[in-house]
Length: 97
Image (cartoon, rainbow, N blue to C red; front, side):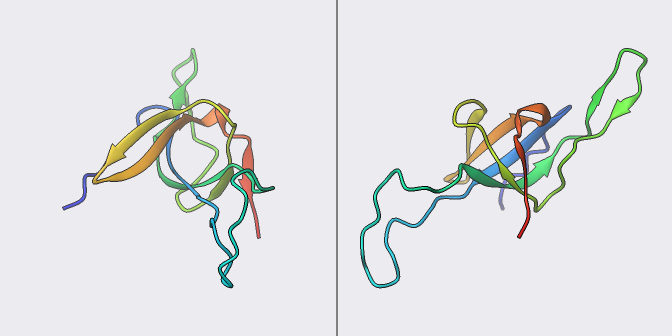
């Protein structure tokens, strides 16, 4: 059974999207191509509270594809899969198709 991690406060659990290293024809792509540093939101926390005690909800939802900073976040391994925890305010934006 897979472990479930529910982030606390305004944290977001993200699985980074790894760009392919080969094309379908077998051509090797360079490591640092023009791919965005992106990820898929797996789980979100309930949000943070302001000084008055009001809940400030997280701005992303499960399943969203988001743009991430090059550095930051906390790396976590669950069931041999790699995830990252970011604060809501560290996420740069939501990617739409």
